[in-house]
Image (tube, rainbow, N blue to C red; front, top):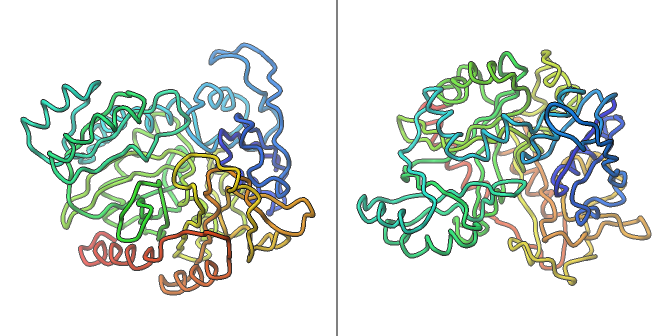
Length: 435
């Protein structure tokens, strides 16, 4: 197949490698050239967008996607470009509907309510002043969630779970400032375990349904700043599972009406007897989808293509369980580029072993000048995430931990409690009959 991957910050570069490993011809379009070193030497150089400046009903100045069997976008945020792609090729990963669903916090919640999915009580604000008056009046514990403004994706670092009302009052001005004064919602905190239920949707129905339990905090015991995902446990779900039936399944009519195709994830909070929707991810998720790709095995590109073409692909799980652990070096998790974080040697990964590289989501990495080893590319310190898959959780954990131990990077940092933490949450869902 001829495939186009349109990326904004190189997050989808690893999928270029993954799809090429299956023998496909992949063109890589990168919007922001300062990320062109991501996986440099391992994948083809990013192509120029070659804007043809043709005018369409959705805009102008976008590359032509004619001739591609599949067009992929690695993040929401370029809706007009993705809509133009959809007019010329089977496309998944972004578009006006996807951008609306994920990046407009309030719209996403209202979409859940229209699907009869429970949501925690929430209120939208445009300034901290009005929010403070609300917090003082209600006196409850809240989660701060900013809207996306002029960004490729939501800034998970500015999603903040307060300890109580007083804590939120102390930090809300700073949160508003670092989230670039974007509008935000305060959502009532619900005590439970967070779980994301994902599936592939071909315009008609879901298949390849899975659940991801990810740890967002940077340090053990959920300390430190949010990273988006520091590691996860992913497992296949039956369509009869309660966690799917009372959540993601209820959005089928909405997705059918929108003509949606692709992967979509509903992030939820689960109590002993109730499920609450939190937010959507109607695109590739990092690290969930790279783990799912490893669990699926060969033929992953064909599965994506048939999904985009509104067909039914081969439905299989090579392994029903997957575990990944994120490896990084300073300055991560800050988004600061330091010269000393570039060209750091990465031992334990063989640049010629495609099978190994396809089981390790990679970002801040490139081929050395002598083409014999891997070094960091100097992109924020987010190096990679080894993936272990297995027939059982224990088997997946063991393989992931063995993989992590093989990799040696100066100043390498990672959480050592990902298996323990996620298995505890898995047991909670199982005991309470959600699975």
